Image 1 (spheres, rainbow, N blue to C red):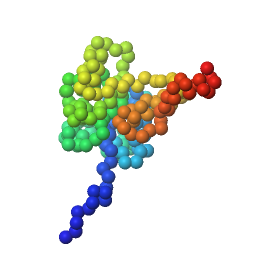
Image 2 (cartoon, rainbow, N blue to C red):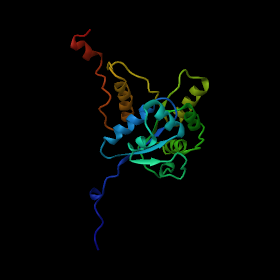
Image 3 (cartoon, helix red, strand yellow):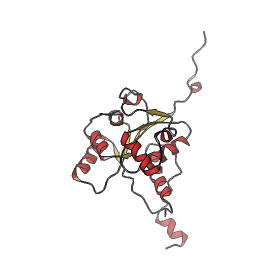
Image 4 (cartoon, rainbow, N blue to C red):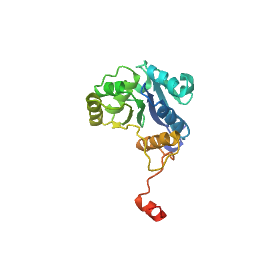
Length: 209
């Protein structure tokens, strides 16, 4: 009788990350995140996109659903509440909603779980995994702010994709990459998209000030 394979001989399970795209402006963040994940070894992306997210994808980037789905390892239907990512037994390193509409934020805040995006977010929270919400709206009303507090208290990270300028970006792509690089940091994945802050001392030594 053959002996069982040693643990080191078993194929290593990929790191799974759920990526959701909703109808808020900023579809480019979800697309760029999928592109960055595709370039990483040992990472498996699971995509779910809302109907409004598909419309916005076409409006902002001229992309079709099939173009987006080609960037992901696994694609799930937003109405399929029986999908693997709807269960706590699905092992993942977390979930990123990029961008996250205020409707989706509100649904997550009250545990509505009315579609696969909000159900998957609910699962990530209950399993104490990392949930990152790239919320998009301005200005913010009191309902928005209260919902952000609610999800933060539940363990989510509210991460509005605000551009940084200390690295002196020259293009929109560089500003988007900076945000996505920080998102990858938050889920524990390697990234070279976002430059690291070297401190004021580094600038002084260069003689610029």
